[in-house]
Length: 193
Image 1 (tube, rainbow, N blue to C red):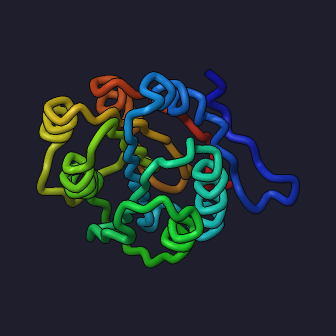
Image 2 (image 1 turned 180 degrees about the horizontal axis):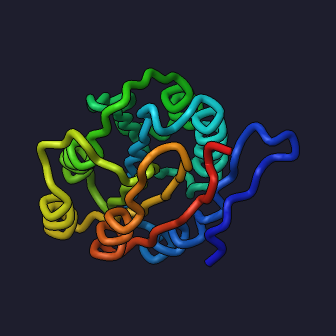
């Protein structure tokens, strides 16, 4: 699949043309309801310009999902914020993605666990799309718990790795979680640049 990001002509947002694996997974059960959780890192390591690009890219990604897909938005830094409950309203999803606050600590595993707990109650196919640099420094939950929970609730995790050369990153953690649950790791290099 094409996992490369594409920048808009004005450089203000990024398009995740990597929806092909998501669309393939969605297409395998055309009549089945689908729920997708977007889990977005808004910690300090994702700078303001990168976050604007992220918000624009997620908007494009959401617009290309199959009609009827229900989407929720969870955002995190050291604290997990459930920004939007499951909805088919694409405009509401874009609004929820666009607002931001940030602190320096990052609780990826806690955000995944909270989001997947809500996602597991949804009918049909369940997909989680995590966008992060993979560096967790404040979660109570562990990577192993996330993988076990996702597997037991048939949740496929797609991880989008965004890097910022000024901060530590852990793409291997993202790769392990994604590949262990049926999804890919999609790398977006120099996201903050």
